[in-house]
Image (cartoon, rainbow, N blue to C red; front, side, top):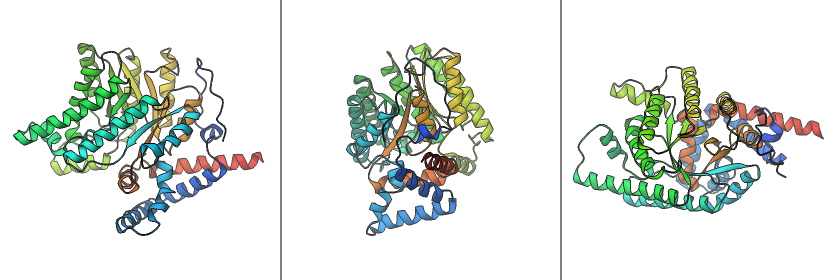
Length: 403
């Protein structure tokens, strides 16, 4: 498919998230039919759960043809490939439409130094790839891919570490620093992903430590705030005050959140206050308030709206216009998951806004649990499937009517 012409660089073109011609410009008719069938299946939560269990079992048992089937269906929809090299075709295809790629190594750590070092080296490789590609604006990692969860949790709880744990934590911090130092060296921005609340404060402190070291000239290290937590705007504001005092830049990625059911369950088990907002509306309001705060302090804060929510995405474009910020302002980004919400990503990019896709990658066997957990735990895939299905159907009908 031929790419759409780029928008005029200095203007804020109107954005319509209902323009399926732009949203699916990169997809052939065969692509649309494949996506239609996949999302039609995913409209059934029961099928998603049953199918996920069957796929995990089939992979575990090594049934012939299972990996091929998965790699050419759900994996192809939501992942870029098994390796960085396999992802390059996706990076280039997205780049034709001015959509960036965030390579997301989606293999979970195994809890030992060998695994943590392997993850560090893979993240360093994504930074090298970003350095050489104009289509990769960020790298990303989870601290739990580099550090022992139990130690992170003990630190947040103020518990004493053994000498062995101190040494292990120091090695984890060294891995984190190696990533941020390399990112700074090559001017590649890097996201520190958010995780569970019972060790998120430890992650925050590590992120701010790296910011104070590497964000002196611009926002290289970006921390993530899950706005389904009722305390995250306050945490963001405190981080802004500390950045101003320390004279460094604050990088902020705003998301709604990925662990809601788990957070509520653990809070109940431990007898703690539930950190999750009482309603979705409260989360939406807090998210948009956080956008307003960040754009209002754009001199110090760089922001990425990691969201599939159309209202919040539109709200950010309006905030940028109100503050006289050009769509291409390097301090403001939009991001969505690969294989989802193309109506946001492609229309935002076509209107000139900085937009990127999170592109998970890794061996099929290792990445499938990640994708299925998203579908099962927080409906990041299944909850969006009806909207995706309707948009794909609309574009198929539009093309049929054109003939």
